[in-house]
Image 1 (cartoon, rainbow, N blue to C red):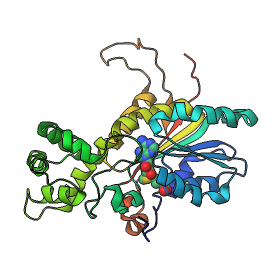
Image 2: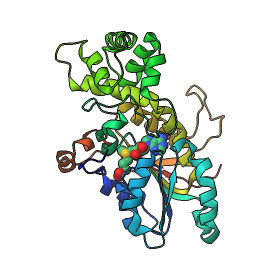
Image 3: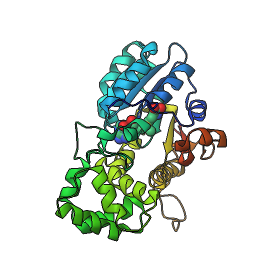
Length: 323
Ligand SMILES: C[S@@+](CC[C@H](N)C(=O)[O-])C[C@H]1O[C@@H](n2cnc3c(N)ncnc32)[C@H](O)[C@@H]1O
């Protein structure tokens, strides 16, 4: 369904471009292109001989980004893929691009702007929102995976408690899972409105944040978002050249923790237990953090509430260090 709302307003676009784009002639990868807002900002910051690989697992996002980035034709290549499969999916494109420009065999920067776009939330037929009635889908890529309705039809109540607790960090997980399973078993769980009702009846004056947490938990499970992030970071690390940068915008602590811990380990190198007097693993740092974690400015959060929870981290890939 078309809406009059803007597709998506990119978050911290200035900070992303400033921290990520260092080589105007380089190849950059936006693995979460969405409506193309950050992609466009990157293309504008690149010189006329820089190039962008614009990726998303959602075909609707690819279409929107195609329209928005049409003025940059020739400097952008589109690729519909989940970022966990970036290494495999992008390999033939990188081979092709690097025939003319050998330095494009590796990327100068990779951007992750995690989660869902405003459009995905606003489009009722995608089933992401407790504000709108729609099918229990929640897949970012509607051509793959298991929709939320199917997951809910098959899941055991104890597993649903774990899912809501782990991915939604919701204390009422037990009560809510029980209510959802009762609605399901009574044949009354067929839409996002039904799911919202099943959550709401567990508490008088149910706060929106609980609804948001349960919907978030299901969305994370349906799209394997945390597994995708782990594998996506590995893919980005593999595709990046020396001196290249990774920028990640996370919107909740589960994602942010994965990024922080993985990159802290790569910045540290050595994995020996602290009790060992000298390093036995020989692993050296392969990344360095670029500045500290950044949040959106007060002006941006006032204009775009979505920016309130954004956490931007940037890292740079180091060259071979002497052993
Ligand atoms: C916050 S939106 C990005 C918005 C974009 N930066 C812009 O300026 O319009 C996140 C996008 O990432 C996509 N996405 C999330 N997880 C993904 C994954 N594992 N692989 C590929 N795309 C993913 C979603 O489909 C969504 O379009």
